[in-house]
Length: 484
Image (cartoon, rainbow, N blue to C red; front, side):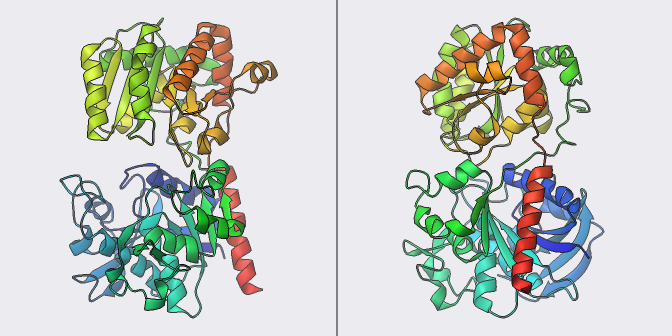
């Protein structure tokens, strides 16, 4: 009988997505199935999720769940085995799953994700007859209460794993909600959920899960330091023995340049010349000058300070002054959106900006740009650089977190050894970024060297096979430890 895992997350690709969390939660189950792990994923019943769950079976019900009744639906959609919390009073809201129409967090997010956690804890405790999981795997702060609820409820329970995707988001709420969200008074303590006088859903998971993972080895080290720990470094140092960094992967069926229907021309590492048609198509679509002799630098990203987008904006004069073009697909901070939009208006043949996320355009970007810029101040793992490697778009990345773990700097020694796959830079400053762009341009002008670099990038293992094997090993060790 396969090991059974209940994954708990606030989003899952392709049903609902705001970032890389959804991609990971959506892709990992198929990879785990090859390791003999059966995964069911518990998600909120947002409108888009319920639309995909039309043939669902009701497997549990709650007469009252934070303002109204709720049902638990079991279904299979988009290749995933899902459990869906159908609670209209909490989740029947269009648009972003976390933000209201004004762009501000929904005021009842504490209750919405406490409900998700309570449903998960009920399922873990045998709420579906004969279908209790062996492992509960909680993802990010929205599921952080799950290990805490199971801990404080006492009695037999599955082993718990908490994966930290981004320490910047910590789920902080007033202490007065402690009993409302199902926690006993003793939970509000330094070794519980208390964080500077508030409840932290993230700390709940970090403190009380059996094992912790984050999404790259370098990030696992960074977050245990005051510089990278965002106030949680003390907790993470205390739990260092339970913490490991497991790199993310990407779904190589979704991200496959040889079969990608969003590309103007499909290609592989042995047919890189076919890639040139995608560059021309991208230039034409975005209104850039269609010029094969102009290197195109691209960005597919949230527009935030974390992602270093302010540094990149300020480096645009240097980039375009060197004869390069710039293309951006992303959304985020309104000030940054406006700054990039204005830059495009000033120089539309060299700078193109698409505000908003567009999945098909993101694929054409990966298949068409010459280099992909990821100047993040911190980056737990990053997925966009993995897609870039797969598509032969040379990643130019800050030497932080998972960017450090997935891109080999093409310095002279690496080039001589035939192992470089991209460009790294440090520190994360405008000057260092500009020097990295200069290095990229020097390499790009040597067409033979550039093709070799692209071929090595495309040969990188960016899929889920190795990460899934590590998760499977972790799960089995936990189950074996509990049976011993």
